Image (cartoon, rainbow, N blue to C red; front, side, top):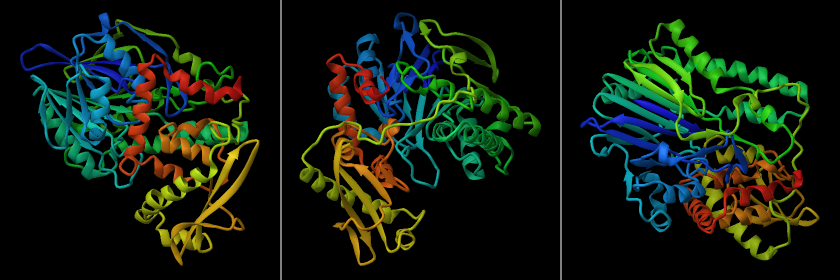
Length: 499
């Protein structure tokens, strides 16, 4: 088996079919220099030559986040990949079927449902959803399991299975062992976002250093919980012939920004995680081999071990890992503007009607369904209400309107502006979200105008509550890509304050 890392979550996996012929699958192909959702830059940037990288038999997209489902990358691949690959999609993206048929017409499409294996011509593919008990914005992500009857590949993507749970580890161990009796690869994507965000949010260098120490301690604890024996009967790490590979961490700030943010964003590296996990495995006497895989590396797995590392033919890597080595002494502190993503005055009354409707139809059911905290505790903690304030206008001039629920009115309604808001937003940003021109990560380059939390914004990012908004976003960017635009045309104007 061979795994070729193309950066972030994107990889090519090569396995033999039952017939002995090669099967090659391209997963989560975000290859553009910029990422829509996080309004960031790709690290490293890469250039692909598909005459050397190909052929590709299938393209797999694990979920709808645009660092995995990138319309700009898919439009280019649709032009470049010959013969046309099969498009494999999780059943959770069935609502995008019309969009894919319209913009990727030559790619035959197959949706994979949970516990319904499909035959890819001598390769069995199955997929399943995460088993974590908490809702998240990754709930549409499916974990892919490929097998040729002798060896197996499990691609976790962003699902991040709770391996600290003995039942989950037991289930995964059984699945992998049955699918790959000779050897198996557990491929996980890690971004170490908690450490990245703590570094960005630090108000000075001392706070950044303290948060980095805390995050490294937490990483050690997490490595322990993920690998150490926990009472599961069938543990993949205890089964000889298992290799755990770690990819990811490919989102930085746009390369066009002059400040050296990439030297601040990554206080914890994938190599740090791999080292700690391997130390736990070695201490516990577990035969699993753990390794980070750097972009541009091709890993060959043979006899249940990493047998060879080489460079990926047909892939040019433009940025070196050394150019983002964390430097705790760089005095670079985030000071992003308190402003809407896009300035300008709009029809405030129309925005008001849309926002009040979305608060009632989307946010209230979300609040009631959440139990952390339960809505009755949320209201009690908020002096009997939960209040959202909206700024209508832009950073040069605005007016505010407040909306709240309370024990007497368990529905959002406009109220006087005398109270203290729990959340505060720009109407323009919410308007853009409703139109598919923003998402849950787009405000990375802004500072929210107020509020102690921003759960309405988070709510809008929950895929099963808001797939209509996701569909608008994906369709919009396919439309832009088809006209020849790239993600940079969307991302860079939002960073104009840095120029």
